[in-house]
Image (cartoon, rainbow, N blue to C red):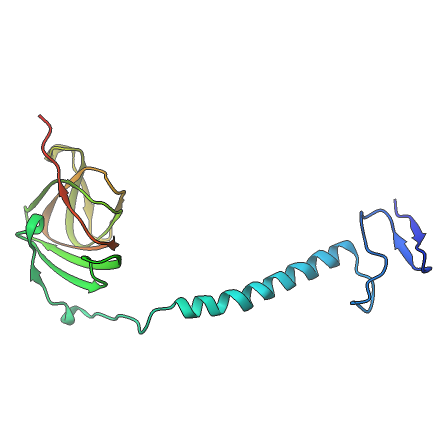
Length: 186
């Protein structure tokens, strides 16, 4: 039920909507409760954009990185990636910070059980990647990931992989990249 009351200045005030200021010199008219909250939200949104937009723009790194297939230069993999080929698309996997690499694995090549210090994000670009979780490479328990598949493996999770057909992976993470071999369980 709406009740009209009069304040000390003789202005009419609704008393059924909770606290509504009776005198607002900063507005040409008194706002209702819903209008006041709408105005507050608009001001908050505008302030967020004014403060946040310059921060987003200033956080943007330099020019974009664009790599076409003919620009990819493959290098022989080393250490645990021996027998594969890799290329760095952006960043430096040996240093702190984000990076993206591609790995070309020949048909039948196996990557024994290992883990990483950071989450590994893998997209299968071509071929099929067979993956498994654990300390021993067991082909019968591997899951096939055809081209277009994605897998995210958290840091410290022991896993292994094998290529079915020449397989190209795109791997993203935060450096420095590490790949630690796991001793097979007995």
